[in-house]
Image (cartoon, rainbow, N blue to C red; front, top):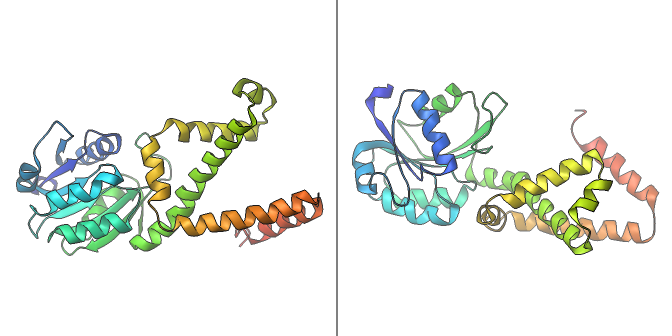
Length: 262
């Protein structure tokens, strides 16, 4: 397909990820229309003009948006999303429209440097003529494309995002519980701890709703949290008896099973 053959609409295109996606497409010569809550073309106009519609709204709003626009789209068009979870959004898109459906998740934020090794996940839902187009677009932008199922994506995100952000939240809550101020804490901080504080700051300064949806909205996080509780109790037992040798042995076992040497 040539760039001049069709137009693209981004619902939520005034948000950070929506603007990123619009810029990426425009750099490749596509005609892109964006809409926000109070600006841009209506859904009816988007569906009438655009062969591809990309939904880039908060996870909590995705179902209602895809239900509204999906019903207006012809079978020959493509409906996509950019949410951080894939099982529920993809199911909503498949139920809402007769158009082709592709789920996407950029594994980075809107300000990331595309010269880095950045990946984007695609989850084909119902694609025929549009199966290769998203792959070509993202690869042309220098992104590493990972094609998988929505179930596999969400299981991986339970670790990559759910556990990661949950751990940052727990660290922040424990630091607050100790009552030690940030200035005093930084005075004693090692370089590694400073890097962890930087991560906590990024999470705490981000969208609270987004992180809440990533953690609470992913059904696979429950299993990860179960592991977290079990392991924490095991470590508590070891620490309470002051068994440094047992802790060291755990680190050695983790090092040998990390897969880095394989």
